[in-house]
Length: 223
Image 1 (tube, rainbow, N blue to C red):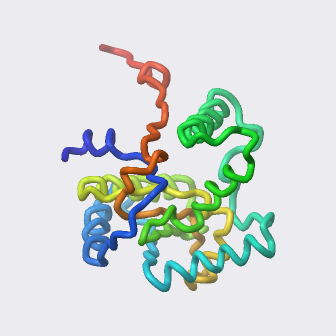
Image 2: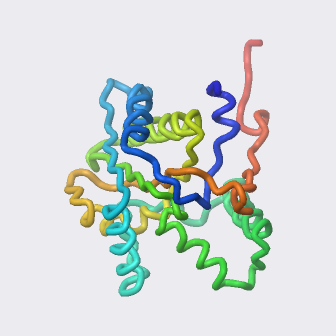
């Protein structure tokens, strides 16, 4: 699989099989992703991989937090800007509507929609969870480098026919995750990622998000 094929194949997988992924396989992905671009070669990323009992500890800790204190946002920053503007507001709204239409969940069925959202906190059934952290003293440039590293990891996974879902949902409970995994300041948890083998029979994995055409976001001069 070449890079362009991997980019076009990759989706946010939201239903996984329980087929294990070995530490050796994950190390191979990280060994490839570590060559991701990094300004000044700072390599500002830290990675925390959980499986088995460690994965369950994180799930249990966040479930407990949700049951006792569901509304406290533990993120160091808002996931989205306040009063999101166009065209970004419509794009965010559309992906949700497309997903729930595919699943046959009407807008008024708040319970079913909430249940699907809560599946984030079980990694959508994936056997491996990955958390990414960064030193809170870093600036936006280094956050961009972290994002490039994460995408490199996902493309490496895709090349091995492994599925991924980047999960900013975990950001809301970053403090609980950090405490459970003993991630200490100045490191802060950015987000999580589900890793495993896709359940190809699951309807939700048929979702392909709509993307803007090149001429909507790019300009060309001098050609």
